[in-house]
Length: 235
Image (cartoon, rainbow, N blue to C red; front, side, top):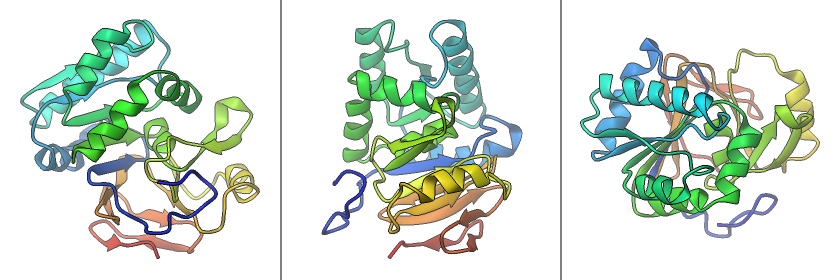
């Protein structure tokens, strides 16, 4: 996988499954989408809300995710300790995941946590082993080749790079002109920009993108919509 700004010469899809959600995670409307994801990745589900601040914010968001995935049919759902406070305990939990859940919050905080600890490598290893990762809002943003950091002056920077030729604009409702202007100034033209509404998402598997959830996803540079249930393979 190459870093942002350059194409991979062979475009090899990652072995695992990634679900990029636009926000509003853990709501009732998300249950069918998340139940289908659980069915795709049988095994332990681990929630780690690293886009939240350490302490009560982290614990509350993680517990909310655990409750939701139990409700949608997860048989073995746990919350990981915060890797910023308990690295050993957190990494042990994260490495046990078959489905890893990254809820929303601050993309700056999440990107720093993943890049500044071994948690980021755990995500890479999980997908390489055929596992699944669900990221919502900030979680979806930082998994891509590029991410906007609205809490850092609307900077547009390289993300974790698991999906190097994607960028997610979450909470998409047709606006965010300031985001799009910042993106177009930095992000190479071959990168696909996804406008993902709340309670909706895009499932990436074998290099193919399928819209899931409540609403269609916008392919912003193409000027068209990817309807729910429809699959599309970027050129």
